[in-house]
Length: 108
Image (cartoon, rainbow, N blue to C red; front, side, top):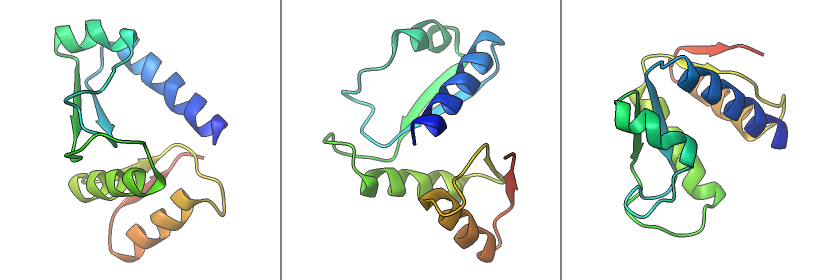
C-alpha cells in the first residue's frame, strides 16, 4: 500500500508542478479537512479542486475509501489505474467495474 501512495503522490506532484487541472477527491468531508500546504497555491490559482461526497468527518476507514472510489468511478467517463496489486482491493474493483461496462485503463 505504501508504494501505491508514493506513486500517487509523485504523479500529483508532477501534475501540480505542470499546472495541470487536478481534482483531489477526499474520503472525508472537505469542510474540516486539513489540506497539505503544497495544495494552497494550486487551489488559489484555480488549477486544483478538492471535493468529497462524504458528509461527516471521522476516521478514514476502508468503508469510506471504498465509497469514495465508487463515487469517483460512477462520475468518470474512463477509469485510469496507475497501479494495482494483482489480488488487491483495487484490482477486484476494476474487475467489477469492467463487468459493469465501465472503461478501465491500467497503466501498470
